Image (tube, rainbow, N blue to C red):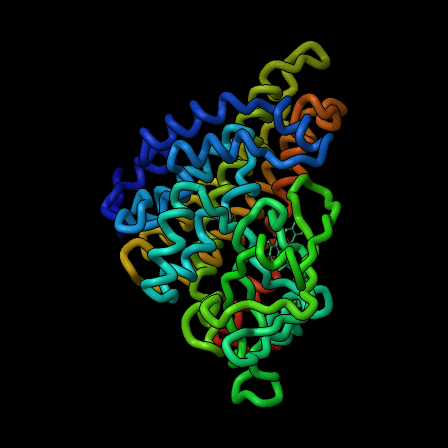
Length: 396
Ligand SMILES: Cc1cc2nc3c(=O)[nH]c(=O)nc-3n(C[C@H](O)[C@H](O)[C@H](O)COP(=O)(O)OP(=O)(O)OC[C@H]3O[C@@H](n4cnc5c(N)ncnc54)[C@H](O)[C@@H]3O)c2cc1C
């Protein structure tokens, strides 16, 4: 039976929509096998060639409207691109932000800002993939962040620190969230925050410094320090004090895209685990004939399919301009858990070989673990559902 979804496609097509994009992305990814990612990780290096190939293929400009030089595709198409990258064993974390950070500029920037930046972001001439929100002392409590941007004449002066600012060494621009009005002078604590587009090359000359932050995965993440960084007022996006709302606005797309990466990871784990379970002979038969090995993989497949349905629903709502916060958050929650369960099943199926680097299972297992923490942790999604969707009392 085929059931219509809100984007007019049918459930029978799940996982198979946009076949040309899927085919093109997996052809590109075939040029970047497991050894490419293992070598990068050993050298703690950035996947320059992979990102160049995606840029040249136009994939990273998927969401930029054609009028600004991009592909003008729906969110579902971008979601398929990231899913296929991850299902191929590659990792899009080095560049996925180039796809969606520009959403804040697109929705809230002035026409001048959009004309000067978006076409260059679309071609890859400018990389906008550093997103400075998280701070070391305030974490998930974003409105409490301490980085200050004080207006002085026709400049803002920025002081403070960000942590986990990924790709900062490989970005020309950074979208920065900073406080422009002290929290004790605003009506709501989410007021008084503003968003800036920082020219990183200029900022590095005086007032901004970046330190690498070594992590469990090769994520090219950093700490960024601001010490009297002067930026022109033209770097402000939209209205001063409205930044929190602008950032929230972009988060649904981010959640959907990260959920898509999880679905891709889950597909890779399920295929890799099922193939190995069929081939590996112990006690004179394939290990996959044992239900203790087979069932966790089958369960992970069912979880992945269920998460994918919610993800498709979130895309359909987003692409038709309807509110999608509930579905985008649930998609991220369910997909990150589905990919983790699939990773666990795949690793366990491989026994000792799951620990051998050359199988890539342990690398993908570490990579997919991140998504239960970033860009938002599972508890914070549950709090959103509990408080904003189900109307239960607020905990913060
Ligand atoms: C590899 C990596 C890359 C990242 N890249 C970026 C980036 O590019 N830009 C950026 O701005 N940030 C980035 N982050 C930061 C990421 O978004 C945060 O780590 C994440 O939002 C969680 O914040 P926190 O680490 O401060 O955890 P905390 O806020 O300290 O929370 C710690 C734990 O407590 C739980 N918790 C906290 N408060 C509550 C509550 N009220 N109820 C229930 N549970 C609660 C959380 O769910 C979490 O499990 C990255 C992080 C990592 C690890």
